Amino acid sequence: MNDNGTKGQDRLYQDLARNLIEELATGQYPIGARLPAERELAIKYNVSRPTVREAIIALEVQGMVEVKVGSGAYVRRLPGSDDLPGFNVSAFELTEGRLLFEGEAAALAATQVTDEDIAEIEKLVDEIAHENNDPGGTEQADRKFHLAIAKATRNTAIYNAIEHLWDLRATSPEAALLHEKARSANIKPVVDEHTAILNALRARDANAARSAMRAHLAQVIDSLLFATEERAIEEARRNAQAKRARYSQAT
Amino acid sequence: MNDNGTKGQDRLYQDLARNLIEELATGQYPIGARLPAERELAIKYNVSRPTVREAIIALEVQGMVEVKVGSGAYVRRLPGSDDLPGFNVSAFELTEGRLLFEGEAAALAATQVTDEDIAEIEKLVDEIAHENNDPGGTEQADRKFHLAIAKATRNTAIYNAIEHLWDLRATSPEAALLHEKARSANIKPVVDEHTAILNALRARDANAARSAMRAHLAQVIDSLLFATEERAIEEARRNAQAKRARYSQAT
DNA sequence: TCAATATAATTGGTATGACCAACGAGGTGG
DNA sequence: CCACCTCGTTGGTCATACCAATTATATTGA
Image (cartoon, rainbow over all chains, first blue to last red; front, side):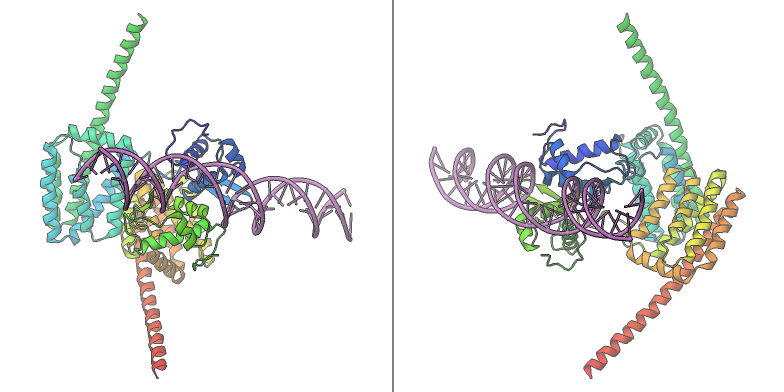
């Protein structure tokens, strides 16, 4: 009673929705095209019309199709074209953006920062140092450090945007991977850089804070470059291994 | 056959979903709580069970509830608690953030901008001028203008973050309202400011682009201030009216 | 001949009722 | 007291029917 190849969860409509999304993604129904009628889909997928309706509503809520009464369901947006807006953001773009934005945020924060903020940021610097000794750390302290500075701007929008940039990293597996590699290869100087930023904030020196933040993120970009090379070397090694394997097999 | 007060679109399930979301938002069903059974909801809202199911699926797709077979639908997340992270961002914070970030973006864009970018931005400046003559315009051209500059940075992360800031406005009704008021009261100078930014980009002058962008957004902040006062005056007027009404009623 | 109109077919919207499967509370027997 | 069973509740799905909006087709009138 389910002639498609997907694993059956509890709810049929989810299977069907997945199938339809798949078909949208593979271009079977281009933007603007009309989906087959509900009754047709019901026959095609061997389910009842209510189930088809549930699946179509799932797509509709996600903005993938638009249902016109008496006419049909029309493709509005291909899956994956919009719902993951930052999917292809590279680690370099991300850090360059952070260099610009967090630099300014740090400058603004220097003019707004309170003693409580300073105290919190101090704690986070310690935490970062501690986290570095622990291999496999998740860089949570680093994130908190940067967000604490964003928070010190006393501007929710700025905080929000910077948080957004950090979240982008998570949505881009490539960027996350590269950062992880960079982190494991480059540990010591980071604490000094963070301390420099903290000192600038302590002094309420906007220009110094901007400079220190930019210097820090420029350093991150450098380490990313280094990690990229490392990765290239590893890839070459893997290729060589694979080649040897093919060779020995052929022999 | 619809005892609630919402206006009926074409689809009943949407009305019901809106009602349920409203009830979630007002705390009638806290996180973890179980919604009434489908059959109960059907009776309560005087709709059929399939319609109730469709509405619940709409909530489920949006991650607001989790449906457990044979048990019920449970609240996972209150609407607005996560999907609208910037709900309380004020128009001022937003524009201050844009001043900082878009200023830097403009500076970077000045070093990266292509002739095609320039041509597109020129068109958008014209479009903005045109849009200003049309009362009730949606400021779409303005948005496009700023995003085109963000795009000219050739940095997806920057583009993404700036787009995020614009989207924040939409999620904050208060900010959107204030902007609308400000726009209707302050039209003429905007074109000149946009032209100034365009000229700086044409000249590939990063500092000039940053300055022009900052000046433009500083001007926006001014108009927001003006609109705020206007609104305060209106509110005072309304209060006075209400007071008079209460007075005459008491008399 | 052609365009306006009337009619029929198609399509989504909703309702009803039925049956199944998963879950859970409460009773039952060990 | 605990394991087990039973049965009512709940969601999952289906089949069918009818309504309303849309669209295609046929008809009619100029």
